[in-house]
Length: 290
Image 1: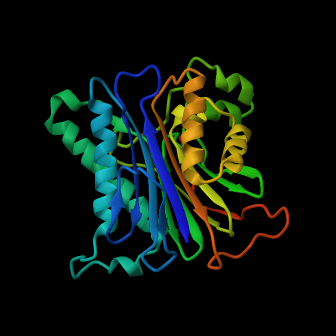
Image 2: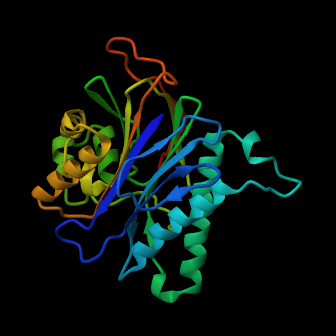
């Protein structure tokens, strides 16, 4: 069984909320608002989790992230392909996630092309697919995915940002990155270019793991160890999400805040060994130099 809760909040500074999220299985039910935790079985239908952070003038960012979520939902819900295409079940889930983000990119570009007021809009996307005790993570931009296990936390994604490149090349420290004047510059987004380089990874899930997806309204304010402390101190995923958002707002709420938190429970999942670290498989990476 997988228990999921998700919540989005405008924060304390922004006039509107340009974030959207998605929770649902691969074939039917999809949710863009949750008032209480929802349980999903671990079955052949799989489970999809997504956060998207919009950007652009006026309301264009809100439009872009809404289009991203809508397109991904529709793409992954397809059960009938034309005769020249393979059935969805025959296509590896990781590949389908990447194709869904490419489809979202095309949709945003086409909408901006035909509506001048929306030109320049874009969105990040971090998309997780859960199937067979494994999570596949597809990413565009700097919204993040974390795995939490036995009181510890690991970041599963790499920010596709100018500042993160400086950190990874040793030119600045992580502490300097937190206050860098160009920390909000991302290197790719849905809607920015015709072709994307989707970062894709996979990780095996263990019993009692948590998977946390969030926009930078949360990750840009709380350090990852603070995220872990709040999640493991909370009695359930809903309480954890609500406290994460409250804490981000206590620290000024400089951006919209969106959190999706899944907890993997029951005999369907193998229990972790003591101090077992996640086995993360990198399928494809984003590199600006490619």
